[in-house]
Image (cartoon, rainbow, N blue to C red; front, side, top):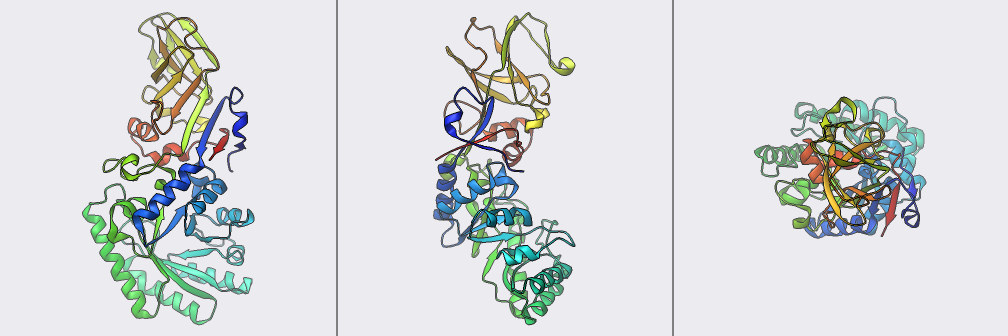
Length: 393
C-alpha cells in the first residue's frame, strides 16, 4: 500500500510526522547517473513504493530526469504504474508459479525468467493475451538468488528460443545481479562480470541477440564501468544515497538524498535524575533533565534497535540539539533526553528531524544505517504508510 501523499502547504503546524520527498532531487540524481554511465541506458528502480519515496511520484521524477526504463519487482507494481498512465519501458522480474501474467503482457511489461517453467508460463500468458511477450533471461553469476545456475543456463536459453520460434515471446534481454555492489573492487565482482560475458556468449551462439544486456546495480553502475553493458539498473542512487558508502559519499557522486523524515514533539516534561525511560527502563537519566516525546514508532518503520543508538535533531525556539533516542522505541512513539535546558527551550510542537540530507545538522540515513548496523536502503524503505509523504519540487 502506498503512503498517503500530502499537500506541502498542509505541513506547517499540522502534521505530527511526515516524510518530505524532494522530487527535484530524484530527477537530478537520475540526470547525474546518466552523466556517469553514458552511453549506457538507465533503468530507475521504483519497486517497494519507490524505496519508500512513493511509487508513482518517484517514477515520474525519474523519467523527468531522463530514465530510459523503470524497474519493479512485482506485477502489481507494474500494473499500478500503467494504470496511472506511465508509458515508459517497464520491467518486472519476480513472480511465483501460477501468477496472473496475462495483464502484464497486455500492458507491455517486460518480464523475466530464471527457469524453463517461467518461460512456459510467460508463453502461456502471451497466448492468452494474443500478444508477444518481451522476455529477459536471468543468469545467476554468483549472487545465488534468482537466475538460472550456470549449469542450467543452456536449458533456459533453449526454452526461450523454442518459445520465440512459436511467435509468443521475443527474447530482448540477458541479465544478472551483482553480489558486492557495496564493495566494487571485490574480486567476486570480477568473476561475476566474466561469468556474465560467458553467459551472454552462450545465448548469442545459440541464436539469441539481446537488445539489452544488464548486470550493474547502483554500485556497479557508479563504480565499475566494465559492468555497465547496455543498461544499468539504478536503485538506491536514484534516491540520493550511496550504494558503497565506504567508497564514496553521496556528495562525492553528485547525488542528493531525497527523503527527510520529520515529526513534532508531542510532549515535553521535566524529570529528576535516576528516572527510568520507556519499556524495560533501558535508559535512565543521569541528571535532572527534560524529556521529549516523538510520535513515531516501530509501527511507522522506526527500528526498535534505534533505542539508545540512533540520533535525531530537535529544533526548538531557542536552540537545536542533536540527541540519541532514549530507551526502547515503542509501537507509536519514542523519547529523547533533551538535557538540562531552560524552561521553554523545547516544547510540544517543536520539529524533530530524524534524518535527511544533513543540511541543518540532522543525521542522514547513512548515519542511521551505521548506528543500527544495517544499510540506508532499509532505513528509508521501511518508513510505513502511517507517515504521510509530502512532495516538493
